[in-house]
Image (tube, rainbow, N blue to C red; front, side, top):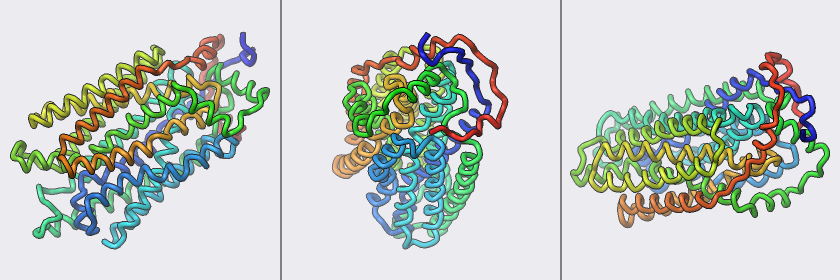
Length: 472
């Protein structure tokens, strides 16, 4: 028996489910803030008198702010100054500021800068919240629930994207180009009022989540849920901690971890192309008389189907991963589905085939986000016993650069060659993720320790215990 496992009795806290619900709601809200621009970009162009490229940056700015905060946040996490509790509280405060900026910006057509500021706050939220699924799952849940806990957390993100891409589009009452000389002033006013209400409701919910985290969350539970966490807590007191630069070097020079970071960045950000340009791509088919649809609404519906596929893929992968720990096989399946779906979308777009567009986008969400769940688990398994918050936050390092790069390249391609070039670019990037995923060779270090659990205690219903001060 390994040192630290003696007399270990697993205790689980029911409070973990309340925290998980709050995290899921947070993910949902930040996704709404992120995804609500592309499908009504006509409104933003008309109301604020800006260009489509500037509206793109309302989405892309979301990927810029992580450049500013990532290294300072990593340093504070590494030195124990910014534990899980502070991370989620700070993230949701930034989320509230994001919705506040977005709501106030609609007061005047001179306040487009507030839209950008709101997205910068939302980008900080994204950087921190996207790192929470593996951290919270590993430190609060037993091994047989970790996959499901990660999945439930991430589901909030794609439910939010579904809402963010469909609700604003529903505010468009009819097929109208709001930027034309005969723009419908009443409709512009209607969309403005709708977005004001949407942002105000989301602001209220995000403030409620802040309060939930203040009263519910600690960095770790009083008693670890697995042997691996017990062993790590004992060893942490015995071993000298790596310096910040040493820890960064150890992770970024690890081939599997570095590939996981790159694949994670592409997998999570490639869909940015669809968020900012889907309605315009559908409008291209309408203008060529290949389809007779409301381009804004149909673009939102396509992204909603993508999100449905993502939810199904996330939950299915999480449940499978609870019992089937072969991460290489699961990641390869997800990456292959991701790539094949992008090829299928190109064909469906070329032939203007509506069922094909829906099915391929569903599979895209299923495969890419199932892969995302596996990458979360690989990151914490492969790097055990390093701090999960540090590891999972660094995992997001490629999201910002990939998001900005894909968005800008996509806009250049769209303006120069049309929609098909954007889709080919997307498929090429998906193919690269398939190749890189094939080279992942993750270790199952945490699992090797946790499988030695010999005594399972009942769930601990002592809520006062779970509110004990954090040791971090």
